[in-house]
Length: 375
Ligand code: 9MR
Image (cartoon, rainbow, N blue to C red):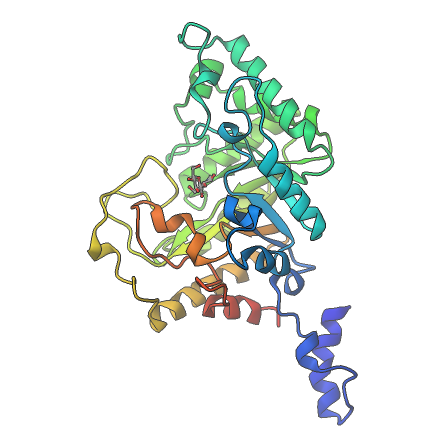
């Protein structure tokens, strides 16, 4: 309604009819308004943003986004660092912030091979935990966390990054102790803890055909068992050179949509810095390269031509998202370039520019380019 009125304004002006209000006030200038009716637009919030200690960033997030994810504070090691000792302080604060600003919350994450304390996988003697003990701990954790936020968290990343690049299941403690069925177990437990929550399988590099096929197999296996899964989360940690062919992103969206599940773009960013040789470019946290100045070329600012290239690629990606009804959410992995994890991965201490708001929180050419698609 609002948007069609906005489109009418230039016509009214041309016709010599004075618009009732200043047009500049009604043109949607926030992502959440501009993309309403297409998909939700969100951001991951780091602890400084949740606690309001990053000046201005909380306000910027509240204006621009209608869905948020905790970048770290709902991971197992933060919520249950010791067995039976839960700490919900920061995640409660995130929920309060989201509700005060009419935003949805995606819970990240119930089961992952990273950021999970060692005790989870050990028995009292320090030997590997048995299957029953681990299943019990998983259930306790999911009940406590998804149960606490029942009706408040819109959807959960139930299982994160279970796949290798070739589409096979990653060798993790979960797989080792529980076997491949751990994925279905986790989804069933999440569904029991919050029957109305949307349940997501989340991973990076899902545009790559082999990994896409692996995710398709996961979805089909859950569906065959009658275990609910509502969406595949494509993390989308991209760069200027990858995906080489953005149509691979479209092909993955179509492959997942064909299974009857939605696609949520869960962790979008676009690094402008070169990736070191040997990096898979995705989000493998085991990668940690020595800082090389040669690979940190924009310490003094982002050159205009690079910002323009990034804007073009962001626009091409958003065009793909807009073209696919299955895409219900697009979440950036951070709010401003200053707070992005990309400044410290796969090399600590670089200056990257992967998001659409710059270090001062000002919109970059990439912001303008994606807004132009819906203006
Ligand atoms: O951005 C997150 C960074 O601050 C953390 O140090 C790291 C380890 O917990 O996790 C990062 O977020 C990851 C997300 O949880 C899962 N997909 C890949 C993200 C980037 O590494």
